[in-house]
Amino acid sequence: MIPRYSRPEMVALWEPETRFRIWFEIEAHAMDALVPLGIVPADAAKAVWERGNFNVDRIDEIERETKHDVIAFLTNLAEYVGPEARFVHQGMTSSDVLDTCLSVQLVRAADLLIADTDALLTAIRKRAFETKNFATIGRSHGIHAEPTTFGVKLAQAYAEFSRCRARLVAAREEVATCAISGAVGTFANIDPSVEAHVAKAMGLSIEPVSTQVIPRDRHAMFFATLGVVAGSVERLATEIRHLQRTEVLEAEEYFSPGQKGSSAMPHKRNPVLTENLTGLARLVRGYVTPALENVALWHERDISHSSVERMIGPDATITLDFALHRLTGVIDKLLVYPERMLKNLNKMGGLIHSQRILLALTQAGASREASYTLVQRNAMKVWESDGQLQLLDLLLADPEVTKWLPADQLTPLFDLGYHLKHVDTIFTRVFGEA
Image 1 (cartoon, rainbow, N blue to C red):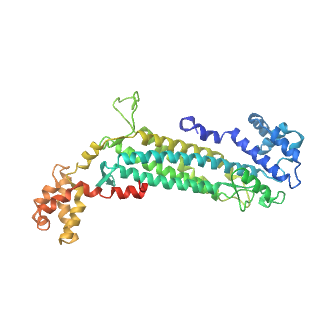
Image 2: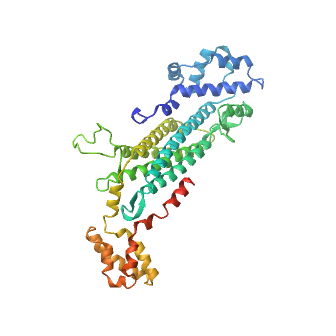
Image 3: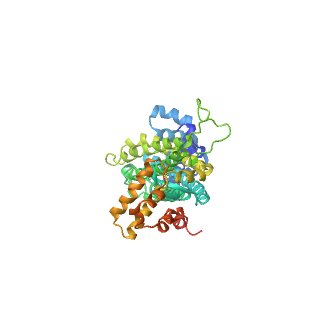
């Protein structure tokens, strides 16, 4: 990923230095496990730990000749270790190193993404309670529906990202496996105890059956999870973008002193951060299909997955890490306008109470069909007047309505508080008893 959309800690996980360091640890831990089996002398294992090192530029130089990255690494390692290096990689195959390393990298990436999600949840929770009782219009199909509160909108986002966090935890567990099973995964030339030792040392579990490679359904699930999280990022970003539209303007991104919105129009305050998040979410979701297609490999192993993972591993995790961090900043500094929410809520002359009137008519004895017709014919007059007429006035003037609902029963049906009476219940469900 380009630096513009990258954060250093996640980028560092995918640097060559980190990758080769993990390779070294895998090889060194495997040697330790081979010592009690009599396959590797103890002084050779000790020599690797003490003198073992590598140089990224030198590995690249060797690989240009060998056309094999693991062999290039082992050759460079031997230049540091000396004669004892002949015991390195005993009974192992390249995928043992590559796949176990990828598992370690994805686990560490998941840890960062989980931490990102925790920070986002903290920000959403704080703003949800701040805006818990800010009445606003709920919309379906982009059209005014019935009242809700801005806090309820954020409570929904909190619940969604709580599920995202749980999915990331599951995805982390899914990819946290180690394979040190040798060619075609039969352990013919390396004892299964070596795999168990390396797995424990690297913080992984053993892969029950690795056919020289760790099965790619695990990785597909991991990247699919990242795609789902990205979808949730876009959902919240899109909501903010809509709310910032000039015609709505119930909330907007923080606009810092000196910030410029347009090179041509000095008045512009554009939702650039959430638009950016929408684009980044598309990228992360775009990595899901290649991960799914990696599941089907030829027989015990091929490398059609390799080039894909070298790109989507860093790109997907770096992009989502950046997006979650950016979204946290947006929520933390989000500007919220409760007065504008009330203005918009009252814009359509009381139409937001139409369902309650419909239900009251049915309770009073009118059929549902007749009740719907009575409310709709008055509501359409308000709609066509662009809210200049008031639904209550029209209903009070309609004898077919007042014969069922006289004024003293009709007027209280326009109480805004009626729609918000269960906000506390929703918050308790989402945030627990607090």
